[in-house]
Length: 411
Image (cartoon, one colour):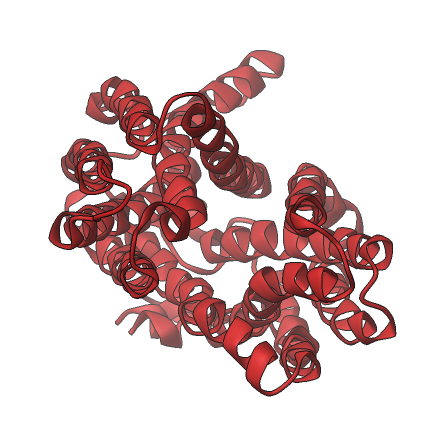
């Protein structure tokens, strides 16, 4: 079982704790500044600052890992995410909350890059898809529970309860230390990993080819996260029934969590290529169905909306897994941190673009037109999904593996 692989329990515990703090505050921190008198623009700026500092931080995490090592970086992520939670009680004013959002963004940027990089370090390439699936559950589980529940808790029990829950990353300090010890102890030639889509060492030319190889998974990820980000942001505004919007979002996040988990096993068994292009097509189809469902702003077609959001949820989770597998297959072990950073930047950028671009198009035209444009963006990535190069089949473990130090990793 992949969860028994050395270091994986600590990674799952640290990730679950970190994402619990992130998910609880994501909808509640904007509500807190509204409670303090801020308007809708101020409320929107709270998570805008969070994501800005997240993306900026992600660019520097690979260098920080090389310079300081795993333990200081992992612990810093937990502290920077957990400590600001209770500090919200100091004030509900916008300026103070934006400062705390910036600090939380630093921690979240570190967590996202180090978490996915650790998966690649801990598990051999032949089982990496399953490991990414388990890691994906640790990411998605807290969000599935806390994103819809946290606002209700804040309104019914008090904001302080959510702020207390959001200190959960501090509980992740212990597994962070345990994970760091495991990662530091790995031998330099761990997994004897070599990329399938990148050139052998060759100075600047090899480096350029590494970046180019990472563009493919990043572009595929942008296509689906733009669609997912648009739905997560705007479905409550474009449906005529709030209960339907809530049900649709739960369906999207639930199918995404299951899909991200299960596609890991499929990728290990069959490679990524057989699933990439069908999931891209499914993204476009789901967005088209959703656009059709909200053509009449006063009468949402519930069945079409739910079908569309379920379709996007499947592709949203599946492509997260498969593109991360592709990213790690494109680079050598020394560049796992770089691959993780590029993937996470692609994810967060796509989510942000989904909100900004679809919102702008909806303001100029209509939401159905904007959602169809997002479907078109996904279709534009189809040639990349059809390309067979780089990481289409899982690599077999070297003959030496399965014995000695890593023998217990076999499920």
